[in-house]
Image (cartoon, rainbow over all chains, first blue to last red; front, side, top):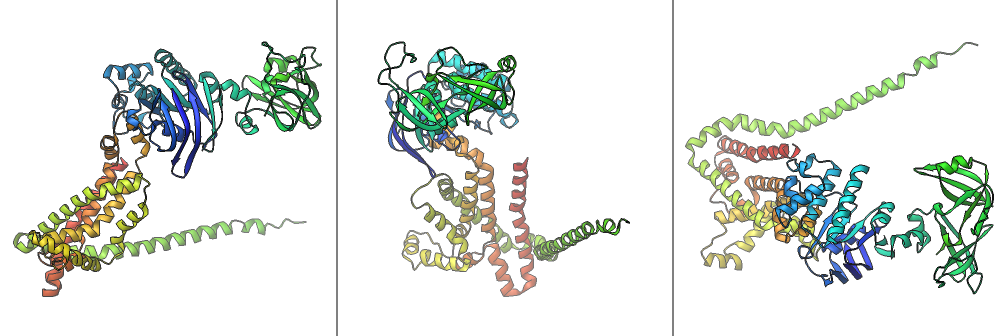
Length: 357
Length: 277
């Protein structure tokens, strides 16, 4: 496990402040945050190469706050790999390996055995990253720290490397903390997500929670939420209304009416009343020609003002009484609904899709 | 209405004039650079051309010259070894660590560079001369500093070690500290990571730094002449011959000293070529 308790650290002029989070034993944690937020410094602090000024770092149940990096039983893989340029690839993989066979096995799993005799300088960025991962794993670390280790890989090799890493992870159940800019990677791999900015933890939880329920409009914006509205919220009933879906009958969030511009929509949140932000992911907004008869509480008529293809989905902006609502729909829906600029449509989303923060 | 074509015809003129002025500037810059190069090169070439042959032939018969060159090489080598041993940890700390008093240490290491060398000699004489407590104590143990090879080493070390520390610091700074971080997580302690990773990666820069220090030590005169006139290193010998016998006697010694100084220069060029390769 990785447990940080009120950790403060200083690297040059940069500071990590009151960092607290837990990645349970055998879990996969992901660190997300803008450039310069302290992600790499965080990994280096856990590794022990950046000194902690206060707080505790517990790895595998043992307080290793002041312990030297070589005694922490962890491995680190940097984005730029940092292969030792005066050594061969084989010597790099074997540098800290527990045994030659473990090094060979790690190299084989990441497909770098063929590179063994090549000088480091001749490797591509992607090859370097694969060698760096193999080098770290050859030491059989209990904690693996990864700083964007797949960033230089082409999509096919990235998928291969992820598969190999995941297979090893399930085999050995070491604890992983990975820095990533790829939000899909965070959702795909992570059990715990930590959002970092300016050396502080802004939010932590499951990737699902962080993505669906960002703690602030800043986080929502950073995580690419298309619909972030400023407005006012007010509770609408003391009892849960009939549209509120709750399998257990226990309602932890309050039904709210949220007003932004000329629109008022139903939402759930723990904000009692007053200024707030509403976040709705574009995938949660559906488009139809006529109002839906389903349980969808929020339906607004408007005209399409923008159509932007975005990979498998197309992002459509609908102007609903002056408020732009972005929906992500499939190319098939675009064809079936004959969507085009200026066409009138109904944008709808459930109250449960609205996150108030 | 007729089209006035005179405007079109004169359009290329500014382009032509700017090309002419660019060429004039290039010629002027080349001229200045050539004069400057000649200023540096002419005295050295003149010295070697005039006294080089006589100097080389004097090596066979002039025992004092041979002894002074050997003494120069030996004392410069010892000073360089001491500079490397003492300066490397300081250079590493200055490049890698942020510690209280870091800027004071850096300033102390630069101090000898700004002191006139005869003044450095006087300062060393004050500290290491027989009349001083330190010099007196050393003399009592049988180690004479002023007027000995030890004094020459001290003078060379004082004036040339800052060059080594400065260049070595740059060499360490060019090696990304994250190589060490990775080595540490792969099981190396601080010393092992330094020995296996940082030192080999900085080796070329450190060697170049040592060569620069050695070359500077060989060419030192001001501090040495105050601290130790005898035995004479090559620079002091050329000065002594000049003041005692005139230019014609000093010339061969000076020319040999210039040829001697070409050795580290060639070594530096070779190191740089290897680095680029």
